[in-house]
Length: 407
Image 1 (cartoon, helix red, strand yellow):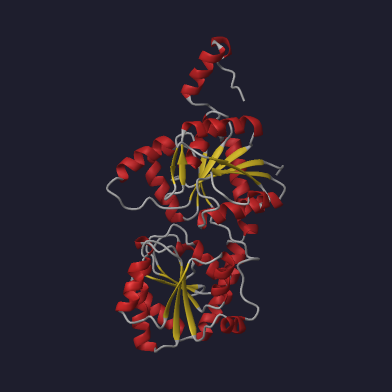
Image 2 (tube, rainbow, N blue to C red; image 1 turned 135 degrees about the vertical axis):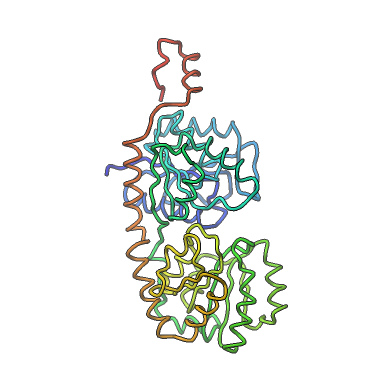
């Protein structure tokens, strides 16, 4: 494929940190290394963009909601439109159908500038009494997006349900998140590193934002049950922060597991890797996960995963080979205990986990799929602009030139 000029767009990018933010950064870096000209378009924020291997364009909308990390405004879109006139991108790749900037720019790209757009669905709609309203708004706002990517089967199913008949002939490509296997990798000296971190025995780790939806609050009770059956030879590490922190701290005290459950708060990426590398099992109690990038990082570090058999995480964990998936919390505890008490099985699963990530989720495996989706989108995209934009061109340039699409 010839070198492409690619715009990656989302409200969610550095300095905020999370799965989408790092996904965009890693994808941009990989595409740049392959010779493509990558530009990230995102909201305003303070970050050393000049140190990144690709160009970053930041815009601030009239309405900025810092708690949601989003920015909205017509003036901002006018500025982005001018950027598109200047840069002449080949394709726009928005990240998250719930990102106002990603959706807005994807529409501007395909509906005004004549540049095909593709948007990745990274998350699920969820349960809300307002869902019927959300679905109407999403169908309307996504109408000019050329095609879509879903990071898991469960996300694809969710997107098809949301879009309904409005999807039409547009494609949804099933492409998982990628991971940097040179960064996320097993430790060369695991036991020494474990000792350096002040840990011993079996270490069970969870890395997650502390929200009700992630269900991290069930870990203190699980820890109590494990402690009653196994004693104090197991340590639970919880890395992350969020609105449920105080509730989890209360439950740790209530269940009397402060000696074996450690809340480590938010940690830098390098430190998260260090803790994963010395862990024996990764525990994911969520039942509503679109993909499970945190679990994928654990698998890449050679750590077997015990998770609930719901959502996208069950698509990356091979039951009995790279971890164990469970149908309910009781089974989750039983599966966790079976690995805690069987070191040989943990080690075998850990080796299988690393191989699985190398084969299916490395950027070397994922980027070609994304580039293929780009190519097909550019070949098949409907270049018909918005009707209002055609009317605008008619009024601006006259009836005789109304059919000329001014790029």
